[in-house]
Amino acid sequence: MAVIGEAPISQFSDILANEITDSALAQRTLNEVNSDVQAEGWTFNTDNGVKIQPDQDLEYPLPGNVLRITFAPSQYADCQYVARGNRIWDRNAKTYKIADPQSPQVIIADTVVSKLEWDELPYQAQQYITIRAARIYSDRFTLSNVIFTYTTQDEETARAQLIRGEESQLYSNLLWGNDRGMGQGLGYVPAQGRMYRRN
Image 1 (spheres, rainbow, N blue to C red):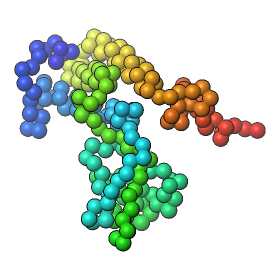
Image 2: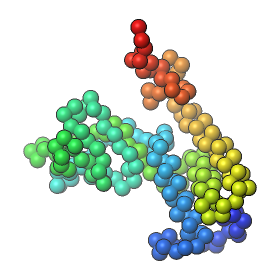
Image 3: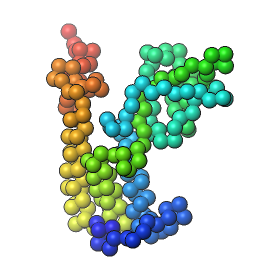
Image 4: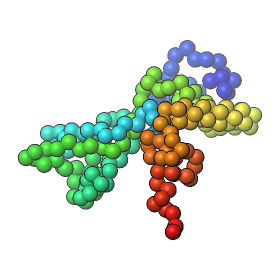
């Protein structure tokens, strides 16, 4: 609220009641940006090799906080698993009922990006999400060029700090990139570079 020159609020508005107040709009913007930023997939909310158990209907339900999930084609060559709603869908078989009724198997997801609770986020992520939400909120509802310029600079600084913290969590190496298989810098992937070289 300080970004638009308003006094702090004493209690949160009920955003489920569809209130149109400054605090309710600010909370909705913060929740929206929180989901958008976490959906990018960071070290703190990305897990590899996650096992997904089938239910009694032979379907594979996903937790409600899953933002993105991928499956390795090399591991499931005859299937095309994707997330549809809160379940796994097989695009080849065109069904949710993937499990074998005789011997249901566990499906292993290659990567799972989850939405964490606010208190579980690192400080750099909380700072970036807050500043980005404040910039978007002020741009939507105040239309002040001064506030927009100020918060844009803060947002760039906060994202740089978030990326710096992210890189410090990766085991980076000049020869083979990092533990995610990605090299340092944009557009240069040492671990996969030989695939695209011309003789």
